[in-house]
Structures are given as structure tokens and as C-alpha cells.
Image 1 (cartoon, rainbow, N blue to C red):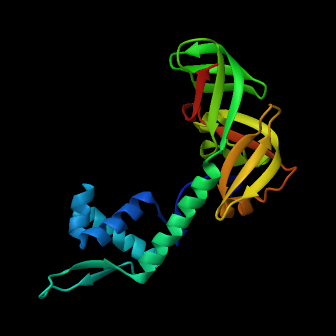
Image 2: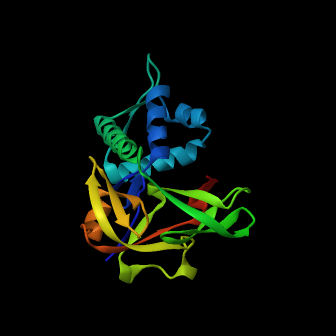
Image 3: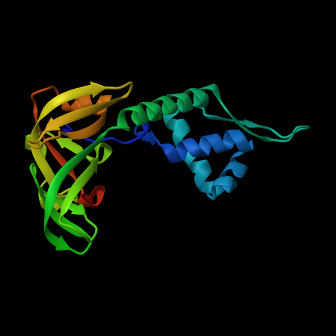
Length: 228
């Protein structure tokens, strides 16, 4: 069973994920009146756009209705199914934005080693590899919640097999559910908990509840530090 989860803004069906790029394509079809014009407006090739629409329709149902030429000319328009799908995506995006407004972790620490733009910062939770500008060694490390992946302790990837080499073991402190996104707070022994964003589907797959032990992993390139 998959016991790793993180946040990604998409709606999935039958192995196909509709994401922001697909939403932009559908909205361009709606505004431009044809797939060809939509592809041009987005700077994409018609063949790739057409192929993507076919993939989406195989997964979600009819999305684009083609009109034959005539007095008003040919073209394309979105179906009710497409409009409903776009509305679902908008609700997902709005839910994410509402939860994500305060969904970041700030850890105070001291730079103990530098390697170009990357540095090791010692924090109360342990060492963190982060992007750190030149300057004072006292810094605040900021970590966005959508950059954190939560793992069951027995399913943590081997460090050498992943680019997310920062990792803290902690205990789930709280789970706050939005409409479609949950914010999970993990106590890692610092003044502030590490926050992670998960879809409800991912939350259920992990089976997370308050008191559960988890491992939070994240990339150094997703972590920023500023002098304090």
C-alpha cells in the first residue's frame, strides 16, 4: 500500500490527472472558440493540445463539443461536463489557497556549514539543508507546507534514493480539514510544528490521526533561510 503522500493540485480519474495546465487549455478553448485558436493563444502545438483533450475525455467524459462549419463557422465549445470539472478544480484551488495562507513553518537556527548557496542550519528540530544567502549565521528557515511529504516510519525512502534528504521524525499534533485539503501539524521538537498539506484522499491513505508517528521529508531547494 502507498504510505507516502504530499500535495499536488489536480483532479484524478482513471489514471489521468487534470492539472492547472489542462485547466488553462479548457478555458482557452472556451474563450477562443476553437481548439486551434486556444493552442495558438497558449503557445502550444495543435497536435499536442488535441492529443491532451482526447486523453482527458477518455478519463473524464466528453469535454469539448465540436461545431461543424456553416453560417456561423465551425469551432468548439465546452460541455456541461467540462464546466462541472472546471468548477470542481476551482473549489479545490480555493480550498488550497485558504488553508495555505498560513501553511508554512519557520524554524530559527544557526548556519554551521556553507556550500555555495546551500548551507546546513542547526535548529531545535535538528540540522536542515537550505538555500541561505550570504550574511549573518543567525537565520530563520521557512518551509512551505506544500513542499513537505509525510511518510509512515517504516516506508521512508532511503536517503540516497531521494532528493528530499531533509527529514524529521515527529508526532501528529493536529489535523485541520478544509473542503478538499487538510493541514497536518507535526511536533518535531521545535517551538513550532512542521506543517504539511495533504489532499483528503492522501490523508485517508496514510490513515493519519493525532498521536501517530510520521517522518516529514523535504528538499533543500524548497527551504529558504533569511538572516534575523
